[in-house]
Image 1 (cartoon, rainbow, N blue to C red):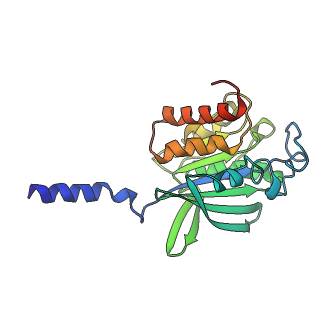
Image 2: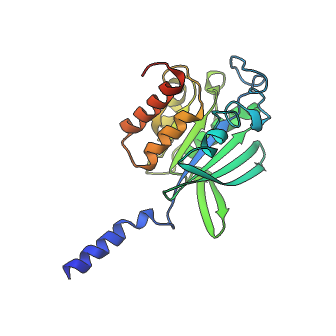
Length: 243
């Protein structure tokens, strides 16, 4: 009976990683916008917040779309234009070796405030977003395991209100790649009870190589310290800023 018992325990312990229970990541991207955001202007082609194709944080070389499309870790499986008001493009990726799915939304740069609210509500486990993929119902936003915000730190210019009180007993992991995000997002993350896995204490370029590196560690269930080290090393590799 002992061998049988061991076999049953192995099968049960692995159930959470089966095809029926994939992990999900939701990335909220506020497109770079020279006109509608309080940023130091970038070249006009990169800073048009209504043009995801060429935007600094989306379609440009190190934007989320471009970076993940050429990644060795992620495979693009679905693209949708204007899936809902304010979102100009939505991408669905699957990890190449793990049962992990990533949804990335490119928000109109003029709607950075709404992007921030949607991210924080998701961090509080509010507003589930369901994506149908063939016979599967994938859960994002408030039901995602990890949420990320990419873009300008609009909280430097405005405050936001929303459903930020946590609706889950399990803290959700959060990545915030924006300038000085620790200072400006702390009061809101306290309310959402999300776990700030990676955020910033200084100015930064929120390009997607940092995000990709952090996600590589998260998918492997590394410690927060290991994930943060990956992110720092990736940022230094491109920015030559020193660890």
